Length: 315
Image 1: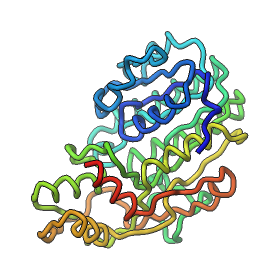
Image 2 (image 1 turned 45 degrees about the horizontal axis):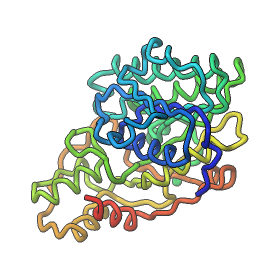
Image 3 (image 1 turned 90 degrees about the horizontal axis):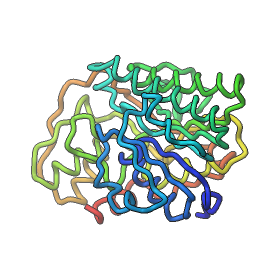
Image 4 (image 1 turned 60 degrees about the horizontal axis):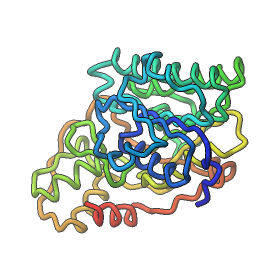
């Protein structure tokens, strides 16, 4: 796709060494921005993800906490902010609600303040399907009643409310993206909070046993990371002054179905064991993506099997 609008621009990506972030910054750098700032404290991101671009003269890597106002003091000119830095784990948000609030709320307000100070064209940020909680109607539309069921989901809902308020009070243009289950190359598997696909794949390739929490009939919308990057950049170049969009594939898969697909792709021979469902886990989550298709011309390029094949090809 054509993202030439980024050429010659000053751009900030928070969480740029993380899973989604490093895919985004590598897309941006190909468009020859005047300056690309990357903020990441490497609590979950990996410097190795961006090692090949850190040395470029147009790149400034800031290894700091996104919630500290001093982190952004050296930035004096910006066109776009892509805010991805966050505590992104539902289980961790229950274990560490204060850390979740500080990182996710203070970090977001820090970006809103920066957007106001530097008069950025657009603030694009990661929200989450976790704002919906458990829903009866599938697929979920953006107009659904919001019912977050974890500190993580609540933090993302508060971000959306802050964004709406700052658009009304300060004319800050923003687009929030409610990511569903993102997967792709570079997703860490060495944490109990990692995505289910990265954990399943890692253990299958090592021949290790796999646990499924709940009965495995949980429904998810798995969206490939390249499509998430597409959504973020479409939001940045849009004329939308305030928007909230689902980002998914528009297709649904149960965890048991996912297990079977990965089992065939990796030639894994074992059966899973089933454990009690985890606190905060959602039973059904499926994205209605008509709004983002119609308003931003979003068009997901990968279905689950295509994305998994690409992922395994890079493993």
